[in-house]
Length: 227
Image (tube, rainbow, N blue to C red):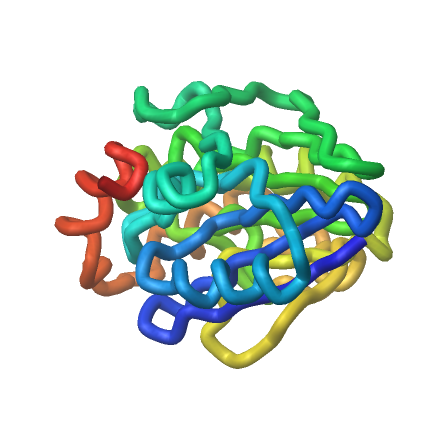
């Protein structure tokens, strides 16, 4: 399996290229519109065919490259059916699976940051989008956010994975590349050490986060797959 992690500085977004060494088929998870040339270069360099672009949710901090990639490479756009977006090609549900070469991509529905948040499990890795971050989690104060729902999603869908499952988040603001399920279950400052749902809700209620800078541009664009 081929794995490459891209980083978009303005929104501190991670995009992941995952590909089959056997069939040369590839997927991009959470692609950013402004970075499409970087993706194109990597695909050409590795002789890969892009077959799917997957968004973990409808983003508020950057514009997805889904439509640009579909137009340029003929790949299919994958979203959760609760995304409120009608421009996708494939609408997944909890535990849906997509085969790419020798591996399966399993969707795990992880709402709470948004209604459509989906984490993707591939072998011993989980791509968590904004649901679970390294030593944190997605905010729950806008865009259908709900702290109780997010707590349940993380505990039922991510923390039930094996301890050594590698966590690849949608963002990191401190240069960290990955974590593990075991580490986050034990040490995550909002969720670790068996923190109760009530305590988590109080933490999320008092974060006092700024309004996302790009939300007024990103949300309408992302509801149209980045058009």
